Image 1 (spheres, rainbow, N blue to C red):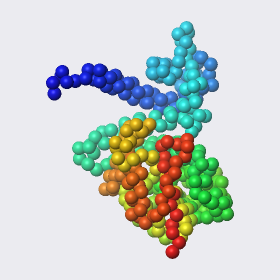
Image 2: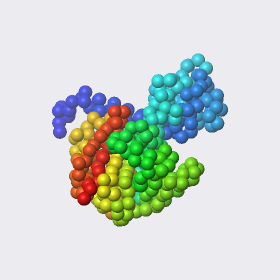
Image 3: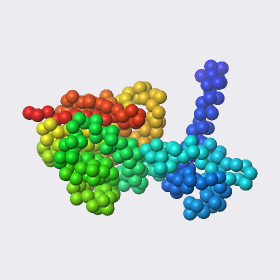
Image 4: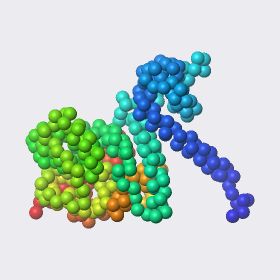
Length: 359
């Protein structure tokens, strides 16, 4: 193409965007460190302070804290007074960066960037040779997902998500059998078990690490009405056992999602309900242009969700399989009257609700 045909303003604007990308990628790493180290939580309660005072309050090394503050100040996250170099976190920022601000703590999601960066070499190999990366290579993914779901699912579970199913709360109080498919670290299931002692809860997950964490929490809470199994969900067969089955952000990771969905339908009692939470997106990429976190979700999908499925010679749906594909697969599994709902405060998730027919 002749250079005379290039729109120089468009080219310059794109170059600026790429520089912003580099700076924001670096800030994502530093934001993850700020969250994991507790620096944001420390700064929230401090008046303007020097790097030494901040490091002492956080119990961290001053030289590293000082350099971290450099990234935060030049990135516009932390501010400083030039005289005496005193740093502070504006209240307008702390409301999006501290554990106290959950479910609005965006710093939790920054951890995905550093976690996914650890498998870049393996993902690159998959680009060249196919296949995928096993769950075991993602050392902190379940820990991060637990924090993520703690904000997006667990925090809204009792007041917003369970009430999406008419009459469900009363059933849970009276006592029913509940299964959580792909339960992860068990935070949602343990919360339900704690609030509904007359009901019985079971959690299945492929990750032994996640199941260990779920059992540990349930023991600490002295929950006697919940149990967990390290289980491959592809061929689980417990026909007619459960009144209510949930799957929180889990179906798209499965190697054989069509078999899992069929197993869920088979495992429901007549009249039982399946509640599936998954990413609010379209199956058509062009319809996701303008999605608030579209690039992040496609990246997580490419470097984790899709890959762990392909590593098992699975379907590799990915997190952005979308509403159209989800409805198609649910229908193929035998579900009908599929309702799709969203919560007013949650742009990230769809909630699919289906009831098994009574023969």
